[in-house]
Length: 357
Ligand code: AMP
Image 1 (cartoon, rainbow, N blue to C red):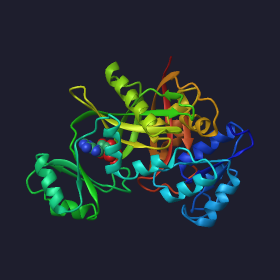
Image 2: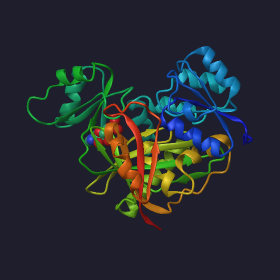
Image 3: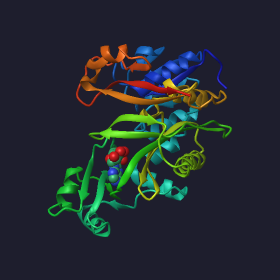
Image 4: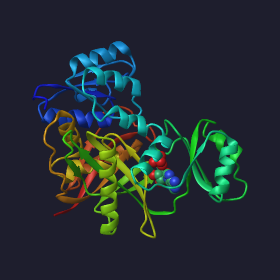
């Protein structure tokens, strides 16, 4: 356990880092943010920022020197950097989790090997692979780049319609190593936020139903009206994944629910997750505090929900609705300190408490 007053290093300076730094401060910790963009959302509420690239050797040395433990807020942290840091100071979640999640193929393989069902998938290295895979999937699928895809970017959908062609599809994702996933005809998208500490204690939050718009999360609603079997399966999958990764910290795992009651894992993020922001308003211990507890070696906290709620992301000029939102009762607002409201940019979120339990 690191003592109050110790320093937690956070790689990445976005809103997730900001909310982690705020949770750390509440538990008496200092935070240092490694992020190339000065005055980033996280640095505004942290003790210190190292303004440098995530793989800058001097910056990493300095981060290791100041920090007692190091964590991260995005999954594209260079694995080499995390491994190097881990030689000097503990890095949680383990760098292995980054390695697995950064490539959709290793991720799917890891999930399947851990006994977690996903959509069918094929590796696509070239147009020929894509043609063969589409043939196997009856022309339907989603082509995704193996690496660096987020919020639906780097994806092409094949719906089985005439005229869709592998050559154009592969070019559209940039002709880079990709994966074709079977097109899942889901009825809902749900996610689970789960935490594990070094001793193996696990806490799992209630599942949320997520609605995406233009590939970006729009709302997360809790509770979800799915069967207890589905809810149990989602929690079991998260538990299996945490254990298989020997994980420490919070992770977010997304799933598709099919009409026939099948649950398929889509992907996981080795970090706090946008679909878990509701925990801040509707649980005694939020995902952010839970993560800080796990990485700092404190006992995990109560993950039970005390209210039903709906979290809505405030994207781009949604922030103009703020005066009206602030006037609502039961609305918990969180803004990220970003100066400019560009289209598609997450500016903040609001969690509306719909019922107290
Ligand atoms: P991802 O980047 O994998 O999270 O995908 C972004 C969104 O695209 C998901 O939230 C789904 O709405 C949709 N999507 C992704 N993969 C599939 C799939 N295999 N079948 C159907 N829809 C998908």
